[in-house]
Image 1 (cartoon, one colour):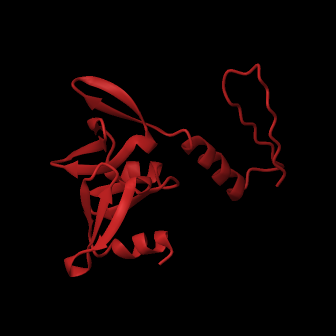
Image 2 (cartoon, one colour):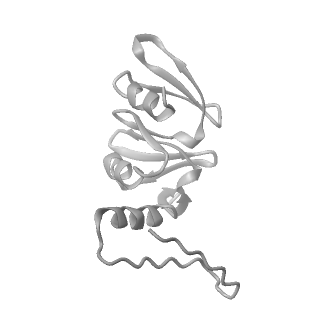
Length: 145
């Protein structure tokens, strides 16, 4: 694969063009990663729809059939289901830690073993999220342990 980067000071946004002899799995994955690198999420707060950068989200939780995006600035409700968000954010640094919670791994500051094989994740804002034991192996794999 040949990669070329051109600086064009006259442009007001970044443009990416992918040229390939045929669209194979590797190229399709590359295109998907490019699209998700600029991932935006929408959430509602106080009757207003807000656009959030995925990196701002600390974690995503499902409570009483509602899905919520938690940021340092507040809590936003989204219409997407947890599995849809998991699929959308799978190539980013988000990881499922329980049946109802997905955590932005970039926001995890420390990890600590907990009772029953669980793990406590402390986020950048000081909140603690508990990972269920069935999801701990995936976290360890992500850390290279």
